Image 1 (cartoon, helix red, strand yellow):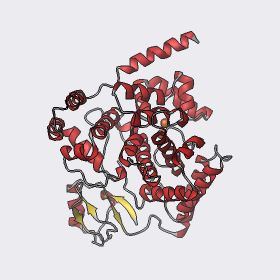
Image 2 (cartoon, rainbow over the protein chains, first blue to last red):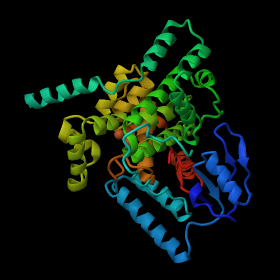
Image 3 (tube, protein in one colour):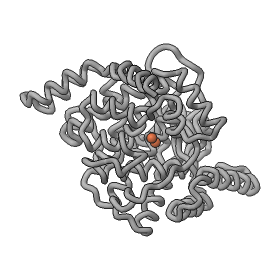
Image 4 (cartoon, chains in turn blue, brown):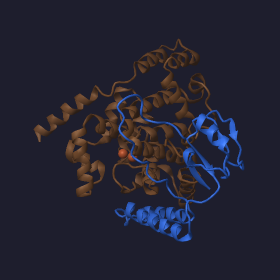
Length: 125
Length: 279
Ligand SMILES: [Fe+2]
Ligand SMILES: [Fe+2]
């Protein structure tokens, strides 16, 4: 499964998790096909992102390259604590997870500066 | 040295007036202290500020917080979570508002640490996972203040991190003579935060310093290490800091518990499964 922002949805995708409102009410159920109407509805309801079936990668090579990069980043983050046995154990726990596809989301794109209004966003949980 | 100290103190004094809290907090604090008001009264008081209300509820209900029940109203939030937690949520949204769009990465880091602290607290059987979550959310508040109120110093600090490869807290000390944990402590004092929140803010990089809340502080310390290890958000530099042994002992962790914590954290924060928290 993969989490996509609503603007990246295309028709024919299938929801892999329920879409719920803040108060827990289910808006669209797991397994539902994404239609034009559904996308418009999600936009109107201000839903930031949903989880759909599918994969991030177009090919196996692409996946491997991505995982390799993720592992290199992992090693870099732990590069200053290599003499700590516990942290090394933790690093390997993370590595095992990464190999199963459990990856941190990519960093958010910096947004254009805005000068007015509220800006910290608490959306999309 | 004397000069440096004087300069640092002056800065501190400048900082102490900042950031100003919503006048709301004051009013509410007084209402709470007077004990003549019910949760419903206080809920009503906060509800007058609709933007704030929306934010507090959204935070309270967001997946990372791990509150077991959906919180539908402010009154309910006050009853379920208590005033200190609601106050903490208000503070968090006020302070992060200061950062505007620039703070997405630190916001994410804070959400991640909130998540991890709650997972740790639950795994080791601490009674207050929700408070741990809040302590995690607040732990790096000092960084926000430094970025927003000391932009020039902040630029020098970032340069030291990027060019010299210093850890952020070392760079802060180098440039300012103090680091974000101290700034956080000044804020916590002026906001009268309880020790369960202020001690993790002050001691999360040096957990043995905590006298009044060593376990909570240890949980936030480990949470910070884990979230950096997983690479979720950005705490100001890319490196996992040393893991304090005192903290591990405080938490009574063994490798099985640690494994459980890591598994749950990955699950929660990963791009596929987890809530994509706050953008
Ligand atoms: Fe910190
Ligand atoms: Fe941190």
